[in-house]
Image 1 (tube, rainbow, N blue to C red):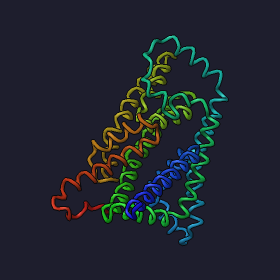
Image 2: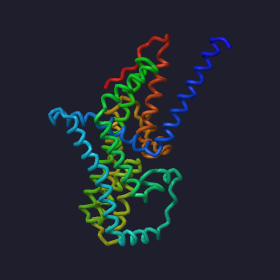
Image 3: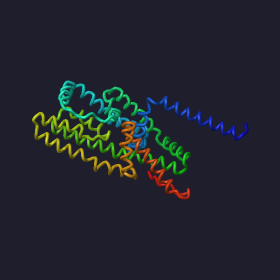
Image 4: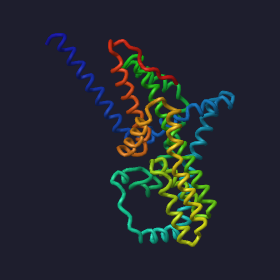
Amino acid sequence: MNPPQRDLTQMTLGVLFIGGLIVASFWILQPFLPAVIWAAMIVVSTWRVMLGIEARLWGKRSLAVVAMTLILLLVLVVPLSLAIAAIADNADRIVGWAKWLSEFKVPPPPDWVAGLPLVGAKAGNFGLLLLQFLLTVVIAAVMYAGGESAADWMKRFGQRLGGKRGADVVVLASQAIRGVALGVVVTAVVQSLLGGIGLAIAGVPMASVLTVLMFMLCIAQLGPILALLPAVAWLYWSGENGWGTFLLVWTLVVGSLDNILRPYLIKKGADLPLLLIFAGVIGGMITIGLVGIFVGPVVLAVAYTLLDAWVGDEHGNAEPPSANT
């Protein structure tokens, strides 16, 4: 066997061995991948917030990590726990609502809804969901503590793959994540809070549960109307026509906010075509669930940037597109 053939064999075996290790690693880490991906999305989206908190806490990273962990617990775990407690306390009323709603004939939801976390078939597994949230918070705390090292490693990895353009793509991916976080998450928070205020003013029972449900629906890009319209119908059915009309108008206003607020925030967070971001959000969510809301736009943004740079690189030495942080 000649030396070139031996080198080719060694390289092939090495690539297969490394590929096998990567596949085995993903297989072993599969139970933790959703929490890891969510934690990474949260950390990238809120990194600047963490740096601002660190600056106000005398430059102590440990204190900033503790503060961000408490904030995440308040945002993720506490609302879910309160919703579970409210559902348990109002079980009889919920059963009555379910019997009332069962009298109406509604078309079945699309098949892809069954695959959505928090919305589809997993909606009843609150214990597992709470555990996933706690695991996400723990992993996010670890990432906050060593964020600079991880970001530097990712940039060096991108540069190793594609030179300066590869490093720019890593920065662009973080921009896409921040843009989607601004557009999707902030819009969901605003809509759910305003919807909850309307429910409380109208005197709808279990307003806290419906508010949490609205937030989940807004994150899933289904909108708050699905949670507010049953409350409007209940008010009319109870004879509260005035409050029903008020909540109906409030529902239309809150439900239309995303058409204005979300595009503005997404464009502010990432200088990418808005249609590309929307396609990534919706397509990613339908394909791989809620985490696809972030993964989809990142994949499309990277593919769009690489394709745009390749088309514009007529002589093979054009400068890559800028990716300012």
